[in-house]
Length: 388
Ligand SMILES: Cc1ncc(COP(=O)(O)O)c(C=O)c1O
Image 1 (spheres, protein in one colour):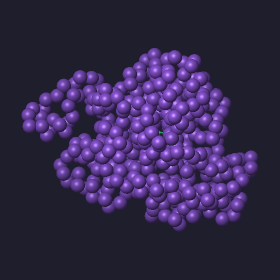
Image 2 (cartoon, protein in one colour):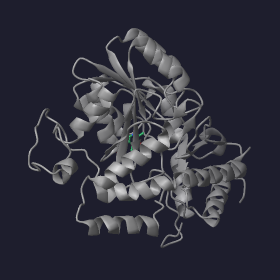
Image 3 (tube, rainbow, N blue to C red):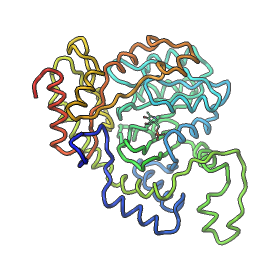
């Protein structure tokens, strides 16, 4: 990865001449919005995952919203998820008039705790859907969560914004629950700048997502303008949204998708090098790991008690050494909206709070050159008091 300065940003997209050429081709084609390129991207994405159908959307946020809507979530319902996630995972439930019930993360990872979820499902019969977030690209314990959802007759939505491509024994993360939602936001492993994809087990749910993503109109624009007859004619059969992915962005996605396996291998190599550099350092916790890790994040944990400096100070010192870092996530129960709505305290979810206070996401993108990886590793070791 080349940058204009010596500063190593937390994340940078891997865009090459192939993506540039693909965008140029669309620009010159005369068709910019959703059309045959988006359709091809959907088909190629579905084939990659080994599913029948994938639906391209303009963001994972839209995808999560459409997913819950298609599952029938509305006023009077509850959506269960972990507070250890990005704003939109929970916000979409409120936008549909449902309430959110949070449950804590498990010990040793940033993911939803199946045991806490089981208890929540026992005491909250109004839960209609569980949103399981694969934080950092490490899949949740779907082997425990999926049967729990099934037993309680609750839909399982996988927030796979970080989890592409996460291969599990039962299929890719995102294809195991009722609906899976992927993000192609600028920092994600494969990107379209903004964008996302939805996959659904039940074709009726997929049909509903498809309908609602384009105004509740029964006919795609592409179909209208390419059909032999009555291009202008369509019917609005629902009060839908506008969440389609334009060809201009899908063109980038197709090229990125073809590189996904390589990107994953490169991310795995960066993570392995960091593991080696940080192994056994007192005061530093290595990222959680498990089957199907996509290594979207390399999430280090700082033990303030042992290091004598906290997470924030650690990040400041990294910055002084020319290394960008981020934090995933500020838990939602610390946010004024959610704390106020449900009367939550920082200690309401002690594991999420402790994980947040310690977490640092290091630069770990594909394309990070070996020199940069060594620079990050040396800076972390120095700050942790181990010398370079
Ligand atoms: C866990 C998680 N879910 C959902 C989203 C929303 O993705 P998007 O930006 O594509 O709407 C994000 C965004 O970063 C995320 O981190």
